[in-house]
Length: 267
Image (cartoon, rainbow, N blue to C red):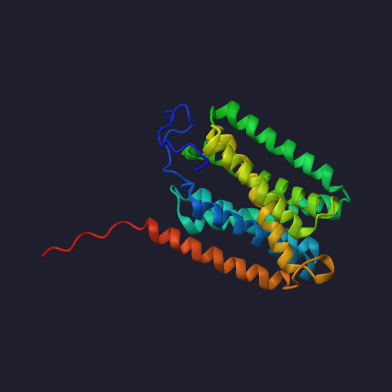
C-alpha cells in the first residue's frame, strides 16, 4: 500500500554493506498507517505536556536523550522488531515536535518560515538518499547507511508536519479541528493518486507519510486544548496516555501477527 512492495533490490555491494540486514521496517498496511497517525498525535501532546510541566530546556534535553536511546536500540537490532521500531517512531515524534517548536517558541520564527525550512531539509535528505542509494523505497532498508537516511527522513517529516499543522491551525486560523479535517482530506490525494491514477508508489508513500503528522497532531491537539482554543479540554496528559495505550495495543497485534508459526502437533 503506497510503497514498492518488491522485496528484491540491489546487491549488498551496491547498498554499501558487506553483510546486509534483514528488513528493518514494517510492511505498509492499514495497521501501519493507523499506528503512524497515533504516534504523531501522542508525540504532539506528550511534547506539550513535558514542555509545560518541566523547564523547557530540561524537557528538550530529556527528549533528546530518549530519542538517542531509542535510535541506538533500533540500530542495534538486525531485523524489524515491532516494539523496538515503534518506540523509535514515538521518540522521533516527541523530539521532532520539540525541534519544530523550538524554532517558533524559542526563536520566534514564524510557522510559515519553519515549514519552508523543514521542507527544504526533507528535500535535501531525499536528494542525498536518492543520489547515494538510487532508491527511496522503505523496503530496501537493508544496510546501516540506508537506515540512517531513512530515519533522517522520518525525523524531517515529523518536524515538517508539526510546523505545517501549526501553520494551518494558528497562522491560517483554521483551528485544530479544522486543520485535522483539512489534512484528512489532503491525505486522500496521494492514496487516490496511487490506487486510481497511476502515481508511483514511493512518492505517494512519502507524501502520505508527511501528511500523517499534521493529521494526527491536529486531532490530538483538538482533544487536549481548552474550550477557549476550540478544543475538548481533555488535557495533554490524559490524551497522551490514551493514545499511547492505543499504540501499545496495535503494536501488540503486530507482534502477535509476526510470531513464528507453531509446529503442528504429532498424533
